[in-house]
Image (cartoon, rainbow, N blue to C red; front, top):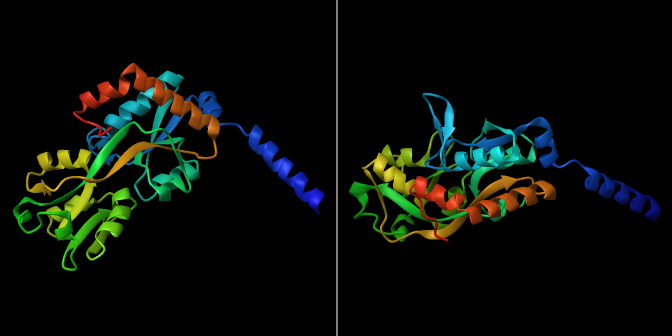
Length: 256
């Protein structure tokens, strides 16, 4: 029996070692598949007039495909399925997602290239009522989150007294606040700065950002060859100033 088990293990390990990396598959097919939600301004947004994607992350994936000499194909996804899209081989990478321990259990992450703070938003007219994060941690308060996001995970830990309302894409949490169905929501400082311009009735709670988080690309955790390649590419692009120029283009400032 022991000899049989060892034989099985050797067979499995040999198969794994010889398994073709996604890197080789992408080069052979000539196509890089990128999963994206298209609802995170200014990272990835889908233009309804053209059905084309644009944004910080779209520029990153387009540059990666160009450097690999392949075409890029964007695969629509949402926050609740963005991880399963990697594990089920629906796409080769995602556009940026926040690194969390829960996601890292089943999917890999590349090196990070952007760090942000998390902020809370309420209606501007309610700022006196909700001047701090703690003021939102109340049994009479409803906090909206978007299903599957890192903010949903965070809200469960921070707002333990509040009523939590998870919204399924394509609807978004901030829309619940605008409609008066929720008192507040939390999001990245990146998105928040855009939201308060687009919707001046929203305001950021002034007691600062919490829980700094980093963005990275979701990738197959079992494909070390593919992961190594994308990590090397990110570091090369950092050194060349690509990411610095991209931050400037979109008016962003990383906390790093």
